[in-house]
Image 1 (cartoon, rainbow, N blue to C red):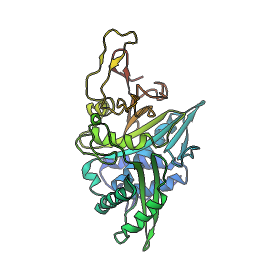
Image 2 (cartoon, one colour; image 1 turned 30 degrees about the horizontal axis):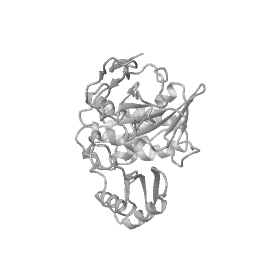
Image 3 (tube, one colour; image 1 turned 120 degrees about the vertical axis):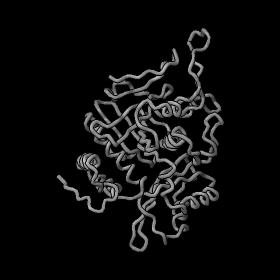
Image 4 (cartoon, rainbow, N blue to C red; image 1 turned 90 degrees about the horizontal axis):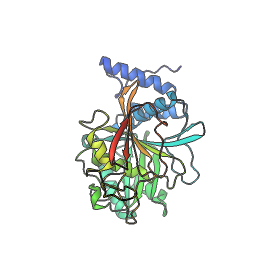
Length: 344
């Protein structure tokens, strides 16, 4: 087995006993990740940028969780209908689930990223008429011209498709750099979404806003899917501790009361319209029905990890409760409008 030296690993070198135990568990999990992904994730763990090492922590934790549950795991598989690659494709006894992971950081963490990237995204939005989101995966050399980055992003942006995601990486004066770039069509959100602006903008008020933003970025990344699609979120935000958080529920299901309509034959439910699962388009269909469920993961606790799931009651391809049996799962009973938690 590989033996890791954590010297100069800024994010893993604390001597706090609790942190040492957590670090050892993370590195133990990393050993079981196949190459070349292990080396890539190891590099991101060493990175001082919070987005880079937090996303690696989340993916390592999820890989270990899926592995222990007996899933066959393919990391960043090729898909036939899009160049975008999901983080995981899980297969077990003829059933498959696609998983996309995202660490959601608070406003203070986001400010650690180079301010010039904000200017770059604004410039690109003006040129491309699209929303451009940039996450640095490695430090950006201070002398690297913005024009060089912008030129590559422009050249790789397709004229078709609602969403693209790709890496811009290279070396400048001996220093490597890597940027994760997401390009979306400019699209106004409905007023009821309570997010404000375009998909690429967000008001950092509470967990509902950054979590909604993260899911909106990922929801249509792969177009029409034939298998269930789960988005895994690490809400690395202040005052967010455990499952059942009210802000999680509001972000996904909305903040208006669920209640039965009058005695209709189908017992339709009057549903809130400002949650990710409940937002409707102009045609009346639910906008994010491609998302089967949202999985929340807190890697601070690793064995077992603090994981829980909210199911989308309007998903085109729902996942059954047994798919991730044994962890807390929330569903909505559409006949009564009640949220139900299962722990079996």
